[in-house]
Length: 556
Image (cartoon, rainbow, N blue to C red; front, top):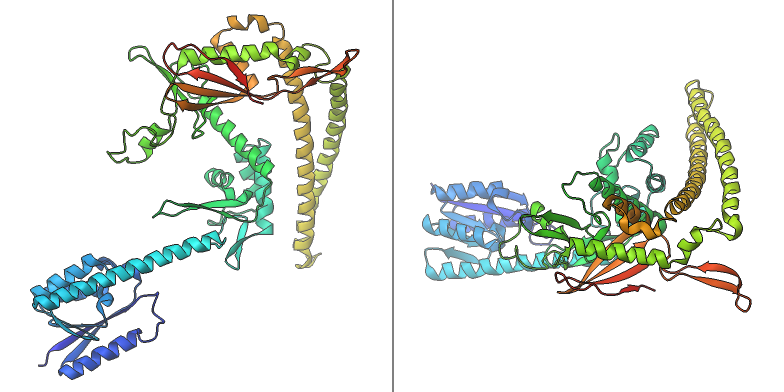
């Protein structure tokens, strides 16, 4: 019985079409070598396996071949070149060791290697290293090519986000889906609950992209965070950590996107504010880290002498991710806010700064008068008239909407009874549906206007409620102080300037900082108007315990 030459063949998907590297060609060379040696042959064909399958457990034929080598059934092995076995140094080392141990002679297109011979073994190691280096270069070229395509705006594969489709390897707007994206964002910006938005999508038969059926609240939340809709998305390279921003066609206006994100943020703050806490924090849900955007937390422990506001991003990341030991205690690893603020000192500083701004504000002084928002209250009277007109218009539109929805029902009946053709049905339905959405959008716009005027009136009533108490604010209870701050202030961003200094940027609801009275006739000082100031107030605070608080400064 003659010896057997075992022929192992494989092509990488990246070079499968290259001339001279096909499976058939490798087999022909192996059969020719077997004939020259006077051997029989057996072919082990792995087929097409890319560099992603270099490990033995991902290549079943190679795994079986190794098992035969280990039990001594293989003495002669042919491969086209070293890379056919593997470009992975670990796998190549295993084959060198097992072939040497079991007396296997290795053949390739250039010659043969007796791995019991030190020179041949050394040469084989060099060739394996070259193969691994070539694989690393190929991988790097692929990575750089991918990054180049991303910079050019090409889509890298996989399903596009809902609202888009792929044309010429780039994202383009899907007109049918994009209109529902706008509906979702507009409803949410108008503070329609997500459950109601989901119900509207289900009623209209709008299905999510990846899983046919109904939407989930989680998928809607993810959609509201997707920056594609405002015209960009970010890709992070896993090797270099480089982040690339790629532009794409926007579906939403920047204004609508901003309003939705503000609504999301307020909803999250509201949810966190409803969680029970053991200690009262005046500025919780108002203080925000100016470096990373995380809402600041408070900690109070009389026994441990803990009494401060701090950025919790580091501890939240600690819970989610396993941090290397040498990184755990590195200051500033997650956020530049590395110093906390004393609770009592910060509460006093902010409270006194807000009182100071209120006492100096011309807008607040004018709010005490009946003509707070217009000469002789004209603006409010105009608003009352506009509210009445808008309310009547909404009533009329709702009647029209009901008729439009009835038309859809009648249309369905006409279709079932065969009174309209299958070709007519979708066109008529689309027209009615489009009209219905337009009516709903107009109703929402008018209702939003009415709600805005009512909110304006509520604010004026709120000012009137407190207008006689400005001098008595210092005697407020902590709960009353928090109510006042939440009515006046949208957010306070905290910035760490150095190891001793914080800057607190207070953002008011109204431009009442450094506002003033402007006389219309300077010579006679007759007639005047309130000139808006700015919404922002900067407060400097020394972070050392018991340090003297710095003066206040408005931002122009």
